[in-house]
Length: 265
Ligand code: CO8
Image (cartoon, rainbow, N blue to C red):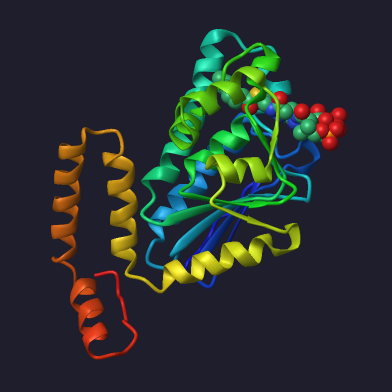
């Protein structure tokens, strides 16, 4: 039986193979302070360590207003440059763990998704967003630049022009615009958001999860390589799937016209 820790600033629930990590500081719009960023990293370690039982991970915010409204401004105001660098490293350490999880991660964006919140969502594999969600990188309005990956991950999602527009204007865009420019993969009515997230999670869970993890890995690792090197990387990963029992099972099940019973071996 899997044992899951409890935390002060986040909730971690595992039900039917799906881990839901909820940033739980609704009174501060789920702003990310250092303690919360550290706990996110610890929870991700737990999710990774329990990959046999946890097949998909969902990240969301508590309450109805915010996914995450950014890094905690009250904590940051009096920081010096060295302390700011430390905070950025803590966030990069935790957000990097999202990309390094073998499981697919889905951001369920239920409300304001600003600054460090958009950087957190951009670190997830897929973003499913409420029609009421709002997105922005408002750091310049505070006299700083995005420091948790926003200049890089958002740019990779939307391209340089849109990233520069969003980051230099510092204003918010709505969910339709986020969907149009490629920040959101799916958009849902607020009350249907979690159903949509679960629909995607359950569809992914039917598949060979070793293959899901390998696909995620090669997409992320090869994305910035020259195409011929990236294609070589894909070939190596493709070949590795033929060393798995899931490959034999998946193809045998197809030929026997029955559902596959994948075991992640
Ligand atoms: N940090 C701390 N507290 C916050 C934050 C935040 N990011 N966002 C909201 N809160 C608090 C408010 O201060 C308020 O507290 P209180 O009730 O004690 O007054 C409470 O949450 C509710 O907020 P509002 O009253 O403002 O609620 P509204 O519905 O009027 O507005 C908004 C909601 C639009 C989300 C508004 O709160 C807002 O604009 N928040 C700030 C958004 C922002 O600027 N985010 C970017 C922060 S910077 C950042 O994320 C940088 C990341 C990289 C840092 C790198 C460091 C090295």
